[in-house]
Structure formats: structure tokens, C-alpha cells
Image 1 (cartoon, one colour):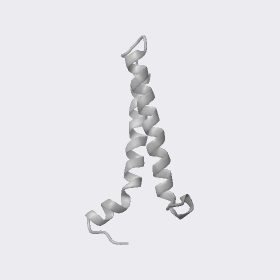
Image 2: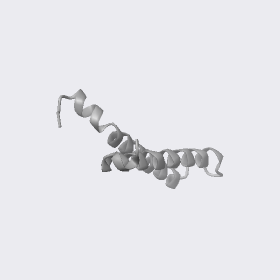
Image 3: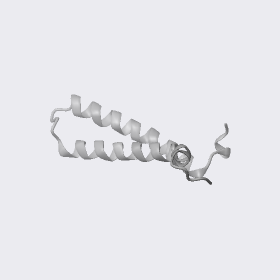
Image 4: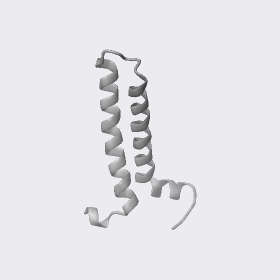
Length: 73
């Protein structure tokens, strides 16, 4: 499937999901290898990255949930 054929929200969801996944991986790596594991800035970045990933997941699966809950196009 070409990216031109995808809906705009699906493309945004894919971008958010990938960036969120990278952000979560980086934040967890930094938390476990950094000198100060209880740094509040790292926890904040972890929560923001997790929020981005969740938003991307919701946007990617919006059609599946629309069908599940009975809302038609």
C-alpha cells in the first residue's frame, strides 16, 4: 500500500507511534544506564514519549475501534 493511499490521520498515527517508540526506548535506556536514575526530567520525557506512542496507536487503530463499537462511516 502506498503512503499516498493512506488517510492523513493514519500517517500521523504511524509517525507518532514510531517516534514514541524511539522516545520510550531512549528514555528507558537513559534511566537504566544514567548516573542519576531518579531524575524527574527523564521520567517526564518517558511519560511524554509513552503518550505519543499511545496517541499513535489510537490513530492507527481508529477504524478497528469504530467497527467494534458499531459506528459506521
